[in-house]
Length: 170
Image (tube, rainbow, N blue to C red; front, side, top):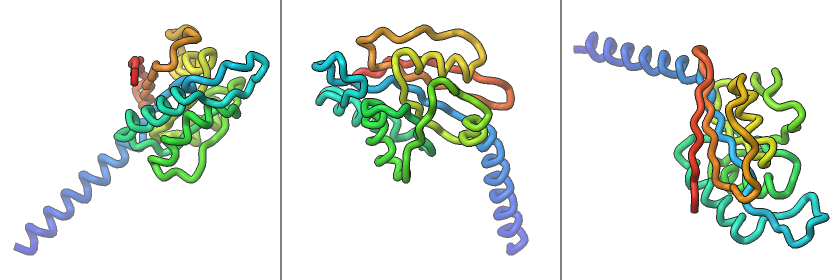
């Protein structure tokens, strides 16, 4: 009887270890544009979110709650960091990382995010291009200025990268 128990424990441990190795080789990026920003001052290049934007940011955290986000990257603007903060909080992360849109998906970023589930919050002119950079092809175009609801999911494995875009309204 003890032999069977030891054998069962060994089999489950081996399976769990093997499935973890498989999982670690898969990286999933969730890319979104920042939520609605305050547009009352057209000269303000670092606007905060509106009330609607804050609600959308909270909604993104709820939508992504089962994605087990390990890391969050944003650009260095109020609207992107405010969009990301509810997800950072919900996932118990210590911080969010700032990325430079001119250095999207470089070797350092790939290394830091490998095997993780990563939220990337950007802009109408960076989010689809970031997805393209990960995919290695020009698939997505700039997001229309009134669109804050696209969710790009890009999965990278040893077999390559795949993607899907969902429209998430709240």
